[in-house]
Length: 350
Ligand SMILES: Nc1ncnc2c1ncn2[C@@H]1O[C@H](COP(=O)(O)OP(=O)(O)OP(=O)(O)O)[C@@H](O)[C@H]1O
Ligand SMILES: [Mg+2]
Image 1 (cartoon, rainbow, N blue to C red):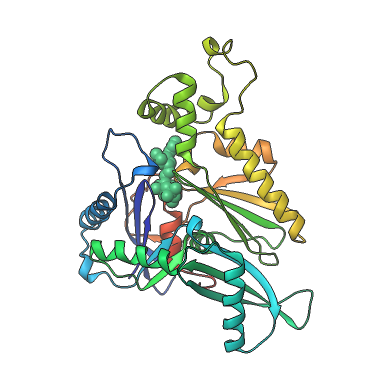
Image 2: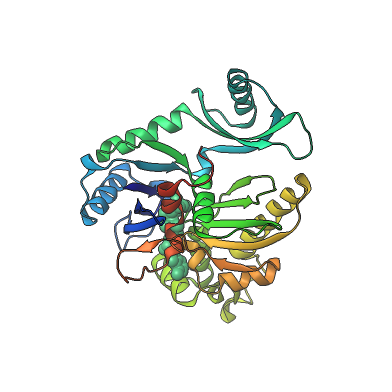
């Protein structure tokens, strides 16, 4: 049994899988809202006790016992972690470790505590014979300790602490055949932030945390329509992207210059990131875009991205290659992308 626990800032998600001779079997999956129902979500005020309670309730609801949870993998969000593909000289393990520590300090914002690093050698560099490609994952000891403290309060101990962007890529590797040509874009839209991952077998692994999520869309919608946060949240769920695109008629006279919607700003962020990737890698062809996270299910978003970016888009189904326990259908499988990636850890480990 392998368990992936994704503690998001609005929902806790858990996926339990089992290795079988044929591959992987999905044993259990569920999610739970963290804040109290009928209270608007406020990312500035997420109480640790509320998270602890939500995780406990979820474990309970799934008929699991915290004490017996072995092979548990949890993830640290991309906003607290730095992940970079680095090309370096081929060197001994000890040397590489020191060199990676040095790189980590150069790249990541420190909070006064030491850096904790992990890395994985991808293989020889395609262009320079004596060099190797390494993916370096780094966070601060402070971040790791507070994550471990949270788990301890729930009564859990993680075997592996992974990072969300790596989990998203692992979920993709587990569930989809990747094309030889071009890179794929994985976009996991959470409540507070979005992980953008670019992955191609021959290409630079790249990830960036975009500090925008559904919370920004809902806030924007509430303001524009003069409705409450909770009303806006329902509105977005029911109407999808259309709710954000159309300006309400009665307000149009008040807005002198058309304000850019939060969706436009989000799209521009994605565009800018892809331009950066194209400039820094030898790849400018993106074969597909996979949407995941709760925000990935917003109605019409797939079509919107496809039209604006001119890249074939689809919802990620992390369970696509798994045997299911029964014929039960799972609502919005894409929201479990991170949790699945944590549970399966296929591909390279971090
Ligand atoms: N069909 C839908 N339409 C609109 N919004 C949706 C839909 N499905 C889910 N959401 C919203 O997506 C948001 C993000 O869900 P998700 O579980 O990915 O967030 P999270 O992991 O808790 O956040 P973060 O990753 O930022 O910490 C939630 O606010 C949820 O209400
Ligand atoms: Mg999330």
